Length: 157
Image 1: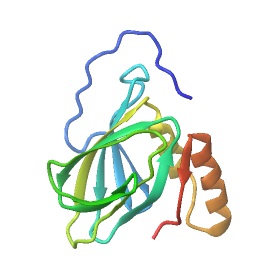
Image 2 (image 1 turned 135 degrees about the horizontal axis):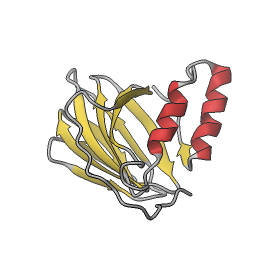
Image 3 (image 1 turned 90 degrees about the horizontal axis):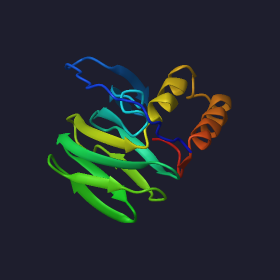
C-alpha cells in the first residue's frame, strides 16, 4: 500500500500539453499532477479515449478513483451498473469496485481522473517500458498490475 509522507507541498501548474503521457490499452493518459507533487496524497490524470476505444474491466484494491467526463460520451460499467456518461458526469470508484469504459461513438472522449493515494503514474511508467501486447509479455503485465493492487477482470478489446 502506498502512503503519504509528511513534507511541504508546492503549488503545481501544468499548461496544456505539459505532463508525461502514456498509452495504456486504448487510452492515452497524461499525468498532470504526480504523487511527488502531492506528498503521495493523490495523482491527477487527463485521459483520452478514441472513438471505438475501450478500457477493460478492472478493480483496484488500494486506490480510489474519481473520474469527471470533460468531452464526448462513454459507456460505463461501474459496480454492476451500466450508464452513458456525458460531459459533466462524475464517477467515484471506491476500492473493490469493478469498472470499465467503452467509447461507442466515433468521437474521442476526455476524462479527468483523480486517484488516491497517489502513485498510479509509476504503474504507467513501468507499462510504457514494456511491450505488453504479445502473449508472453501479457502475463508479466498482469503481474505488474497485481503489484499495484489492480485486478484485471477481462481481456482488452
